[in-house]
Image 1 (cartoon, rainbow, N blue to C red):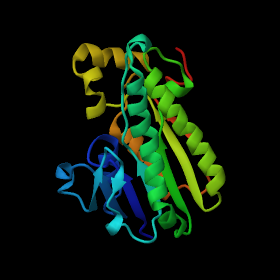
Image 2: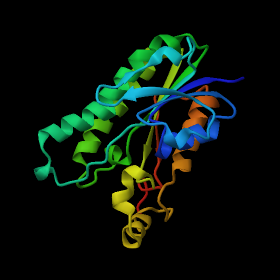
Image 3: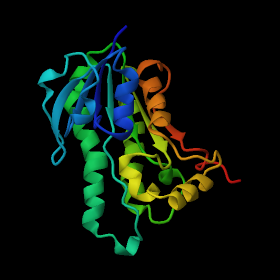
Length: 230
């Protein structure tokens, strides 16, 4: 049965790959700032204003079976050099954006027989890493939100988060933009590879379309770096 799925931030990286994997089998609604990369895909486009996370919801169906919130930040710098405003900016995009998106369509999700919400954290919440204080702080809030909402929304709506390590997307390009940087990233991971958008998208698609007994989980898709030392 076709599901109605809303993807926030589906025009690049992981979000775009999710659209590619499900757009033929399900009704996909994409909210993002731009639509250029989606022109060849079957979907419905909703303009989103990232500055205040408002969504033009006129095209969203009354019954929504899935929601994915993809926007995120990667500010990796020494703590002493990060201004408090940067923490606030990261929190607003990573956390408040997710909260506003969920609240905007919660009624639609409740109209589904069983809906699924997928959020994104980072391996740096579980595994302390230098220079990750800002992203780990905001994504730590996402993990708390995931568990809290999973408890509150059960059994009607499942809520899970995916916690990746570095993924080869436009957002992380400055950390992988030459052979030396890429090789260092590869060697840090037990599986000796950097994540691809497809690695993350396939997990998100599973949670959206094939999972009926998983909720409140933070699922590590991280090449083993979160739990293994070899």
